[in-house]
Image (tube, rainbow, N blue to C red; front, side):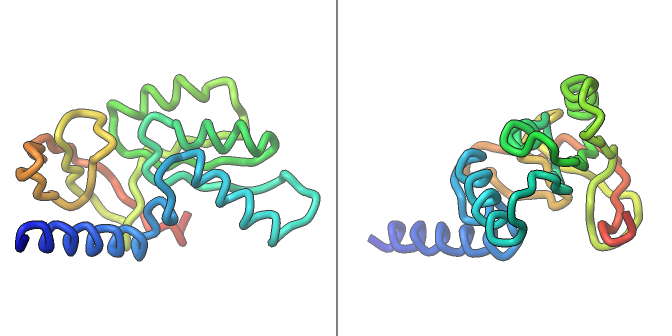
Length: 153
């Protein structure tokens, strides 16, 4: 009973933290997130598909690809610091002159940082050394990366 309550409280805390960090905008999938973007844009600009879109932490480009599919004329800027993923994402969008891949992370200052992950190219990579040993996930893979402030971009 106590462990069940602690688990529920931890899930609520994690979801609340993710919400305030802007992760997923409350959605559970890329499809749901793109749908939310479409609804938000419908209210802000009428009859236009010409948008500037940003994908911070682009990983292998699945979110950017979904944006491209829905918003054909959008200019998309992707920020991905992992060297493993940079090759994949650059190759994936090499024929799209409206997608710009930036080999940096985004943080609160321009500097060098350590990117922590459980394996090279992981979608779980983070500037924080996350503690997920309780899920048998260890963040022992590191990579030195460059991060920038977005407002200076």
